[in-house]
Length: 75
Image 1 (cartoon, helix red, strand yellow):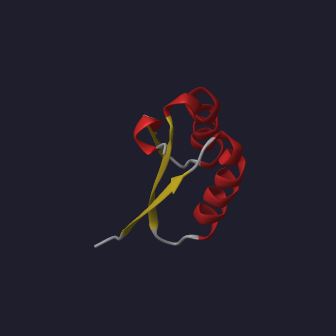
Image 2: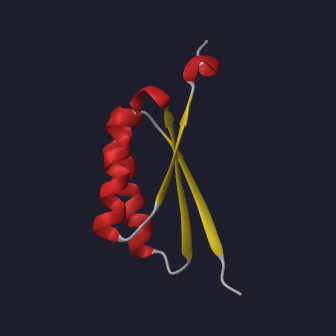
């Protein structure tokens, strides 16, 4: 029976490259199958989605990107 570890990141476009570095490190050092999820503001989808797509190509790592409406999170 193989294990699957789900790792969820939540960030906006200002932290996208930091999340990418962390995700790469996670994938490079994990001996267990990963499910990586990035929860991002829907307004940042156009900026962040290409980064996730590049990961799929360069590192053979699928990142599930979930855009969320931020209106419910503002104070």
